[in-house]
Length: 151
Image 1 (cartoon, rainbow, N blue to C red):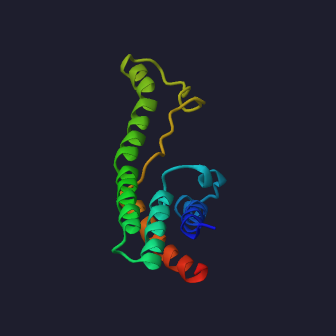
Image 2 (cartoon, rainbow, N blue to C red):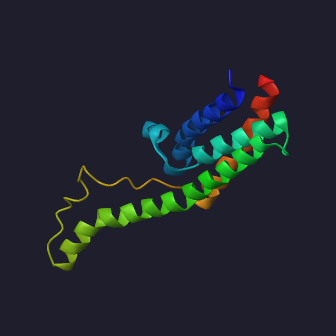
Image 3 (cartoon, rainbow, N blue to C red):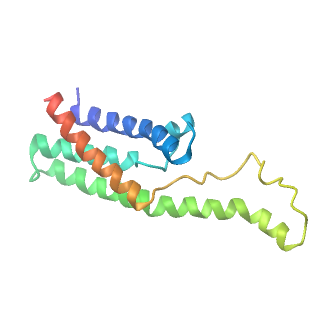
């Protein structure tokens, strides 16, 4: 049984589940689809890698190669989540609006066809920096708790 992997996977699952009540608080409605979506609060990617690095630090110490690898890997994942993936999500919003904007510039009447369009690019891909930070903090706490109970 690989306890660090169990810690990281469980933390990712819990973070994904937490998106529902947070979505209810911020958006006013329950949305079960949030469990399966990327993006949003908290970042499950950040939570998973932070819990893994924390568990390794508690188990083996911070001077080990295992901790160094987990930390660098984690920093890259968090950078990607709030950088590249967030930019891709923002680009998706622009592309989804592009066809409607072209028709508006042509002076065509808006029949709201685009509001009902079924094939749109996914817009929730990345995270705001605060979502990454909250995910990392949740992961650190989770790593400490899992280490305490699994060891």
